[in-house]
Amino acid sequence: MLTTNPFDDDKLREECGVFGVFGSPDAAALTALGLHALQHRGQEAAGIVSYDGEDFPAHRASGQVGDIFGSEDVIKSLPGQRAVGHVRYSTAGGKGLRNVQPLFADFEFGGLAIAHNGNLTNSLAVRDRLVKRGSIFQSTSDTETFIHLIATSLYEKIIDRLIDAVRQVEGAYSLVVMTQKKLIGVRDPLGVRPLVLGKLNDAYILSSETVGLDIVGAEFIRDIEPGEIVEITDEGLRSIKPFKPVKSRFCIFEHVYFARPDSIVEGTSVYDVRKNIGRELARESAVEADVVVPIPDSGVPSALGYADESGIPFELGIIRNHYVGRTFIEPTDQIRHLGVKLKHNANPGKLKGKRVILVDDSIVRGTTSTKIVDLVRQAGAAEVHMRITSPPTMNPCFYGVDTPSKDKLMAANHDIESMAKIIGVDSLAFVTIDGLYRATGLPGRDNDSPAFCDACFTGDYPIRLTDHNAENKDRKLSQLVERQSA
Image 1 (tube, rainbow, N blue to C red):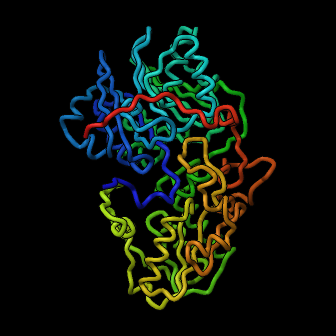
Image 2: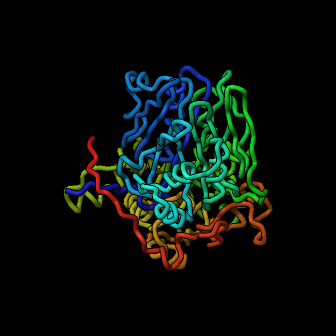
Image 3: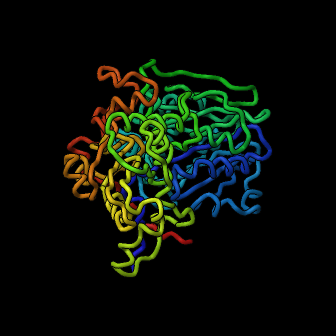
């Protein structure tokens, strides 16, 4: 029998989520709640490290936050007024428990825990240099690179060692770092990955998204700026900017899919942007139809926008089962084929005899889209038209999003007409790159100076891909094979 995930193979995999608390007696409990709100960013594993004044209690495990931190005893085992947490989907390194974050190391200046969202694009090059100097890596995660760079730095102060470390790496990253005396937040120079600052009474909070602040009742203060380091101590907050200022390139796919719709990213409502994308789609690729149907849940705001702009009624023609795990046992090919129905089921009364516009956020491999279209046709739809709220995904991401190689990306190997035939729709259209930018409030994409990282659509990678040159592209790290217990 085969354990697999039949539902999400047509999505770009979530990145990771980070959360940190400084100055609250309930730091671990607040961190667990924050990780709950960030669960959409990674369902593979989660961890929390706290500091109780002497030691760094830690609890890390594979699985989802509610299962790992749902016990009062677990939270009580993480005492202290500061804590750092992480939810993970592995984009670099394997799935072993040694890669579950936050990672911890004991230095000459004391302990340090680090949680990382993103990917380094020169991790192999830096790792080679460190190994030659005697560093012994325990994980295959690029996050450990930061630990060794801090350890080998010749600077005395922790903050100076961290600055030394981030100046040697390339890539997209947000970091939350905890020591005996500090909580530190770091964002990459282009601001590709998100990180926000909040406050709950006298406690400071760092989170990947504002929903992490909302769940604990914290006040949003501001986004950590691209290239900024914030150092939080008992004396308060200090901002450090060790990089030369450059134009930011925030990940535009946060607006399309990754961020929760109730988050505010870079000062903009994700929900509003997604509705605007739907409106842009209705203007750019109108088609006569009877109903607009989202593929839940990510397609809902955009479908509402499409319906508003087009005047075509919005209907929940597909219902999502929210109680399905990410894996299940598939004993036969027939059961495997029916797997999509465990997550999505047609609502025949809203589809039968109707010309249907299906709205979804992306097409990656095309497999799930094909199954859902078949589901809608079996429910009696007269026509099926698919509208996608992102441009065609033509290129893999190297900045913290797990995407298939280019040869497995449907849009990289087929034109739109061929894609429509394969998926089985009467028509297929994607929002244009300019339409996507307009949905965020900009006039369009400035090709000379884009406002976002949109490399998965355009191939315009804003950070060089040192580890992905001809010499390293097929290289794999030596890996200890671990058997994970439940």
